[in-house]
Amino acid sequence: MSKCKVIAVANQKGGVGKTTTTENVAIGLARNGKEVLIVDFDPHGDLTVCLGWKNNDALENTVSTMLDDYINDKDIKYASLILKHEEDVDVIPANIELADFEMRLVSVINREQVLSSCLEPLKNRYDYILIDCPLLLACLQ
Ligand SMILES: Nc1ncnc2c1ncn2[C@@H]1O[C@H](COP(=O)(O)OP(=O)(O)OP(=O)(O)O)[C@@H](O)[C@H]1O
Ligand SMILES: [Mg+2]
Image (tube, rainbow, N blue to C red):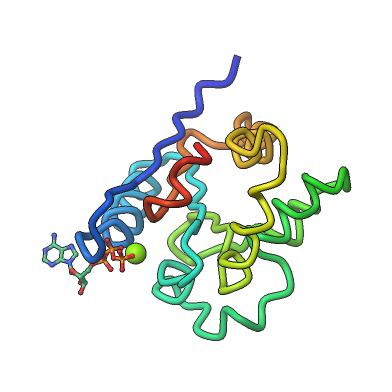
């Protein structure tokens, strides 16, 4: 059985340190030898930008591509989706496309399970999966 811990960093208030906490806890865990995946689940993509992918709107594969593939019964291309950061953390990036996705999810059955289902196959690869999410999207966990 997977020992992966999945942690959503969520708070209903904006600007309270969700992104900063996610980034620093993830890098701290990686420096302690843990295998860590960060999921940027905020349409602003602040975490993706903070980690160095400044032009995140140009990224072809993001968290929204992953969710889209899942709800359309397509294979998720994890290899091209997951970015490698120099601090030895892996990153599923986000951009503004996630804002549009949130509206499309309204009609999806079991929408609260979609992110969890997408991450399930990754749990045997990581000790921790940290998700930076604003409140609205936190209902997906
Ligand atoms: N522990 C801290 N001490 C001081 N400043 C902090 C701390 N954590 C975060 N900050 C600062 O607070 C501001 C907001 O942090 P951050 O962007 O992480 O919040 P957020 O909750 O992700 O915001 P948003 O809701 O917009 O996504 C940033 O300028 C950040 O540098
Ligand atoms: Mg943030």
